[in-house]
Amino acid sequence: MMFSRKIALNPILARSFVTTANALPKSPGSQGLAVLGEKKILSPAAKILQKSTISMANLRVQSTSEKIFRHIEATPVTACLGAEISGVDLSSKLSDDVIEEIWDSFLLYGVVFFRGQNLTPEQQVSLAKRFGEIDRHPIVQGMPKCPDVIEIVREAGAPTNFGESWHSDNSYMKTPSLGSILHAIEVPPVGNDTMFSCMYGAYDALSPKMQALLDSLNAIHTAGEAFNPTSVSGGSYDNPEAVMKYSHSQDLFTQNIHPVVRVHPETGRKALFVNSMFTTCFEDMTRFESKPILDYLFSLVGLPHLTCRFRWTAGDVAMWDNRCMQHVAIGDNSSHRRIMRRVTLQGDRPFGPQ
Image (cartoon, rainbow, N blue to C red; front, side, top):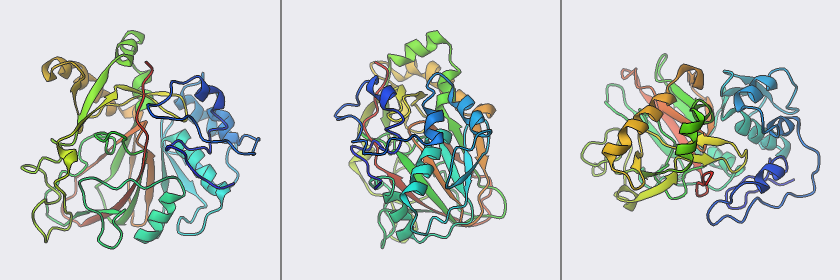
């Protein structure tokens, strides 16, 4: 079975979610899920995910006691999110069965980690293409010989704030990035970890009244403040010698409106879809009016029971779902060089419950 995606909705678990998906509102411009193909037997992971009345956290806990994967080993990091995947060499030509189970684990855990990998930029792009189309960053320029990959570099002693507040990658775009694959090339001996937070859990933590209110709201996202040419650090718009180079993209001036609560197109679950880096206010409200509620929602992201923290070693790879996860780079060690390479996957237009 070849792995392919239609309008950025992954068909691997489509057969698992066909009942749920048929009941969902369709994304603007969406033609629905891809053709399911001939395979009829649900994987153990897909059967667990199909239990739509159980919270995602409880599904993940349940997965620890069941042998749900046949081709990979997945060890959960916390009860809420994250798993380390072993038994996989990402630089090799992986079978469709392995790719399918990686995607199953990606949907189940939200973020998955692979230790001790060794990928060239070209291999990282080839891996990403097994899951979907590549989404080039509209502002940060890619590597000269591999423009689909952005290299995130902080030299020893250099100040930076790249990614150092909670966010979902590229939520300011009309079709935000579906997922991201980050490869550690050079990391400090300690520090500069990355934290992840589950937005399913953040939504579930709200009262029914607050959920109902947020279900009806949209919010404005923009890159103009995070990538403000007068204050941005970690790269340069005008210095040709800078390791990280930024482009004066139209995306700096564009605002896009997305639902505050996003319905995941593959799991059917609701997740908060606002973040402190790119979300400025609610649609048809002023910033002053929006701020109290947004500040409260932003405060949920860092709750300990919703998060996991990943300590990098050289070669590690993280792959996360931007539709239901947020992340933040922790810049606590500026005395060592840090080099990471990232590829993102094209997403679809977010849609909400209403």
